[in-house]
Amino acid sequence: IDMRFHIMTLFPEIFNSYMNESIMKRAIEKGIIDCKVYNIRDFSENKHKKVDDYPFGGGAGMVMTPQPIIDTYKHIVETNKIENPRVIYLTPKGKVHCQEIAKKLSIEEDVILLCGHYEGIDQRVIDMIVTDEISIGDYVLTGGELAALVVIDSISRLIPGVLGQNESFEDESFENNLLEYPQYTRPRVYEGMEVPEVLLSGNHKKIDEWRREESIKITKERRPDLLDKK
Ligand code: 6GU
Picture 1 (cartoon, rainbow, N blue to C red):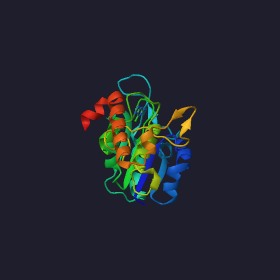
Picture 2 (cartoon, rainbow, N blue to C red):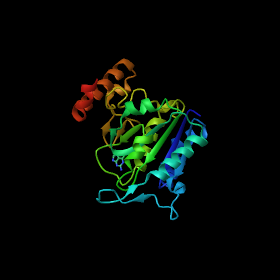
Picture 3 (cartoon, rainbow, N blue to C red):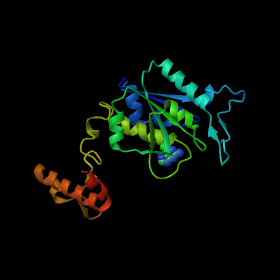
Picture 4 (tube, protein in one colour):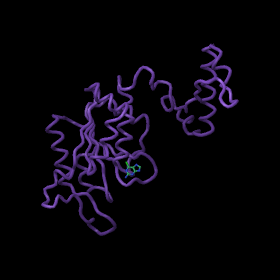
């Protein structure tokens, strides 16, 4: 197994359908990746299995308490014999996720993802175990679960063998800070709309040139910030 994901969450069911479908399912069956989900509530020592409490200093909402989270973390590290794991806390306060971060994480053996809920988690958890705080964009979600799935997906598809021969990631959007060129398939004419002539020419040098020009054009229009990064 090349990569093991360990997800800490209060809503473990969210991950089931995703992990049992399509490319992720295939990668798990092939033994390239593994994904374990841990319910933080199972580790609560409170008699009512409580996992949150009021914020000191007052304010709206609830804060996740340290004990169940830290005990879940210890369980993960001990049962899987992990040494210095990356622990990613999904939060809108985090660094905005991108292809470069996905690439860096794809060389790890174990990645622990911590999904927050309510108004967040006690800062001491972050200070004790969190190595990276990641956001998936400038909007607010109800919890970190969808963000964890986005991060897991973006990492998984970079691990050799996860994508098939025909799903290469080498010349697509963001790998070269360019948006993708337009794609066409059969039929050659649909509702009177034709496929660009150059794509039918068989001249691969011309086709590559056309695609590169189209990529630059669309990137200039939609994401000029990417061109500055190049
Ligand atoms: Cl990682 N969590 C939440 N709750 N909202 C978000 C987010 C994460 N990233 C963007 N919005």
